[in-house]
Length: 107
Image 1 (cartoon, rainbow, N blue to C red):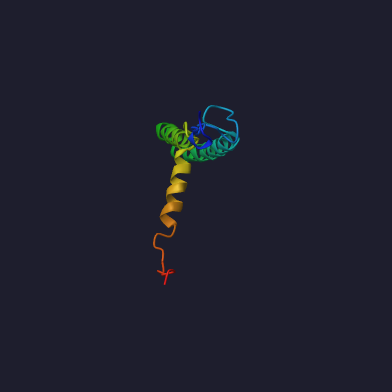
Image 2 (image 1 turned 90 degrees about the horizontal axis):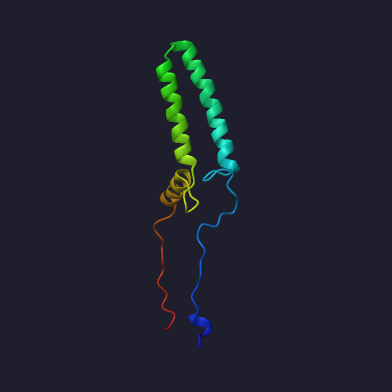
């Protein structure tokens, strides 16, 4: 006989609040990628028109595009590198020292 307190707790993993359009990318991430690629295209075309350096233009565009994809792609735990960095910054900025006052309530 299994008592109410002895039942195992099942916690499902990998449940997401929003569906991914592409594996690892939701609507928000796709929008950010499109905006960054548009800005990269404008800056790269401006750089190429000034310097006529096709290798530097293509290499810079590939570095920005690849970095964007790596930073925004969510893993199995539904967190991206950007999410992890945001959590780390919030933790580092949070209060670390707490002022406690001892009260002897039994006396």
